[in-house]
Length: 400
Ligand SMILES: Cc1cc2nc3c(=O)[nH]c(=O)nc-3n(C[C@H](O)[C@H](O)[C@H](O)COP(=O)(O)OP(=O)(O)OC[C@H]3O[C@@H](n4cnc5c(N)ncnc54)[C@H](O)[C@@H]3O)c2cc1C
Image 1 (cartoon, rainbow, N blue to C red):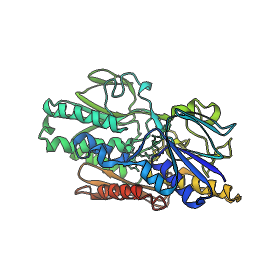
Image 2: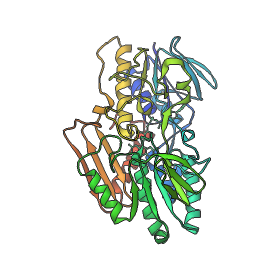
Image 3: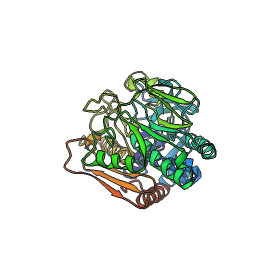
Image 4: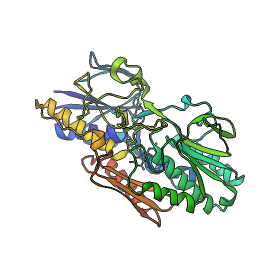
């Protein structure tokens, strides 16, 4: 009997564990270790600050899903992994494994820029707690309006969430009747609007430029933040942007325990894998989702990272689980699907309107890449949320 351990219970970890168990059956053991007892549908966190979602609406407890599937759940924080002896050290004891799937996502690195983050001067929507804090501050802003700076810092990889928050705040300010007293500025490390860390797509820049114009939003591309004070974002160019409210997407590193586990990860804590998500040095270790090291094949004037969104996170976990199962069954026929070749499928909520983004490959060269605006409501994004929560609750990880 083989034992597969999975670290992480979000998009990649949950999918990887359920897929491995479904394919292996009762003869093998799958254990999922997560420091959170729940799956939270992170894409909907952008709605929490405006009161359009409560965190509980988008939360699924992991244990019932895993129990039903026959996956053992360990609620614990992983402190380190010793891939030399196939051992995970957690806050509740050690776990040995035959195969390991690391799907532990990222650590937000507010500390890389002076004054950044909810403990200092800017808000965030990267975690449920951050999104709830961002709501309290938003309510104060509605009572006492002033300038707003929204954006992504240098090194960020999740510009899409920043854009969504931007357009949702603009819409929320109009609904609250305070838009005329809120001057909004968007700052981004992207070389042009809608680059998204994937070198953009035809028509994307023009579309987002027109949104900025229609909704009277200032923007600065190629921006790098020097520091954030209590009431100003100071750019490296020397420009100072006063604010009463600011939400900035920070840079991400891999999970801390990866950085503290010898050569398990690279210097940023991401796991170096081949095109089948297998560790480049440890053949019984795999990684999926945000935890994977996915260097960009192009350079930008200001550094930024590749957006590893929900769909590629799920897909990489399916490939990793498939390959682990193949190896357990004695086959060396492994699937290969590098991150850049996974299709990009995403809905950008642009503030009660949305943009569907579909590319056959996340990175160029691509055979098709489209951005289709839907000017009224955000029905697709809401439908996707309902579908994904249903798929998670019912453990149907094999679906798209
Ligand atoms: C605000 C925001 C909006 C987004 N919007 C979209 C969107 O609209 N569409 C889209 O496709 N993608 C979106 N994304 C990206 C999407 O959320 C990620 O692709 C997805 O969360 C990646 O899943 P993951 O499983 O790789 O990592 P994560 O979701 O980061 O999960 C990591 C898991 O590991 C666990 N973990 C971490 N450290 C430890 C430890 N030491 N011990 C034990 N467990 C640990 C965590 O508890 C968690 O379960 C958004 C992201 C953000 C931040």
